[in-house]
Image 1: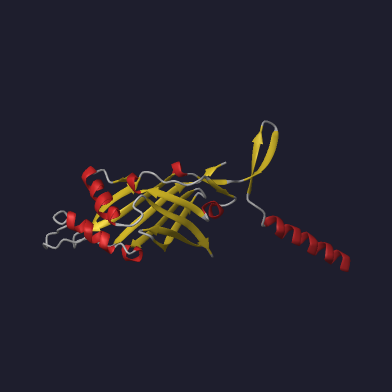
Image 2 (image 1 turned 120 degrees about the vertical axis):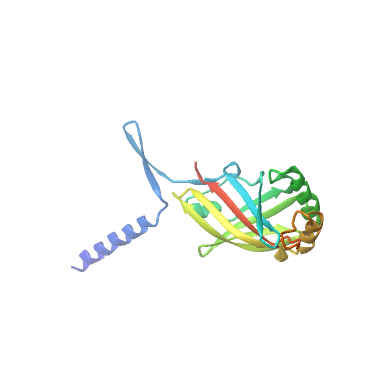
Length: 208
């Protein structure tokens, strides 16, 4: 009887261990069934970085994006593993708002008033299911908490709100507001550029 119980426990242990293995999927090739591990790959060409800044007392949104995002293809057995510890850099020159004059002012008067004016750098980190982007800007590295949504296991949206004072960028913001004084003046006659900037990163995790 004890031997039967021992065998039963061993079977249960093997079953539990099997459940913890990497996710696999079954494919049929001709008359042969092939089982393979699902691999998730994040690529720069499948990733976009958009931002929304705000002007006037009424907080009118001004949207833009960075057209270039640099990082090495990174893979994992889950979306989290593919994204965790992904290091990236963003050329300031790739900033794009569909307005050449605005683009020039942002590059020269905002980012141009900072330290390290060529690149933004960062790392995506995941700890206890909490996502952060550790971003270096203006010579300061600060963590940005992210709200992450993963749909169909491959479409990923990561959103956060930067407070520019966390990167010592309020002087750069003031410089920008001076060159955009009239454009950032609302109906109340007050010129204002807000210090919070919404960030949204979207990507599609490829299958290797």
